Image 1 (spheres, rainbow over the protein chains, first blue to last red):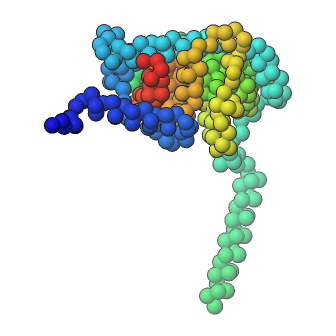
Image 2: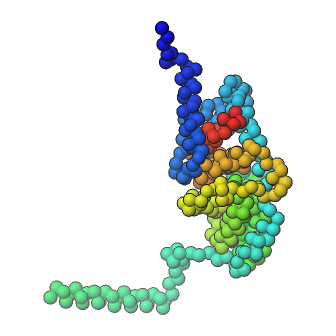
Image 3: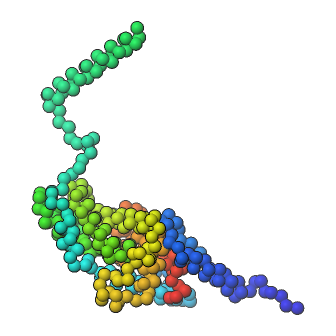
Length: 147
Length: 188
């Protein structure tokens, strides 16, 4: 009699990897919105790989098995990425920016509550008069209402 | 986090401040010095974030115009301040393009990356990498680009983005995991 070996690690691995592959293609076909977390990372990445890429671990830490395969991929990615580091601004962009910059001298725009307020004698007298007038009006109004 | 400011950074900052003072005193052409000094790294950042040289140029131009208009309000390092303007410009562009349901890959993913020579240099891996980067959320893409393309340290990134080293490490790790999941079948 034959039984399916449900505990066969190879069997389990292959069906799981197929499921992952399917999920990965689903993920690839759409662009994530800004707040979403990409889901194509179920199997994650070995911490040693992150450590090596962050410069915290030596290369020897990623020389074995699967790690070596992934490390090689990241080496290639880093090579490509570092080539982009030499890109320069195309000619003429600087001139275009300077032509578009306003001709006026930039001025600080300070909100009214942060602006300096100078109190001259005339301003003080005017403010005092206004306050007294407002106070008198309010007092008159209150007295009238009470009666 | 290391809080000591390197001497070169202080020198650079005082030079930038001197240029800013000249511009504010009416010497408009002095602003070109700041453009020349910072346009390359800012352009690279915009290009890697948007994937389009035309869009990157537009973002760079708008950012420098904005920087000029608000130059009197610069407190602290000019390079960090202008970097944040560009970074926000890139994130706004990504947000808008996604909101308008335009396909990033079809519409703005360039067939050329600036120059014809660059086209010849372009490898399959780079094309796939750019496409995979295009699927990442803006914050993860930003962290990955700053770390792997621009080669910045986590401390420098935290300084520029005004966040913590831990949060940025997390973003870079998540970006790597997503990219590895997308690329490993073909390249690992």
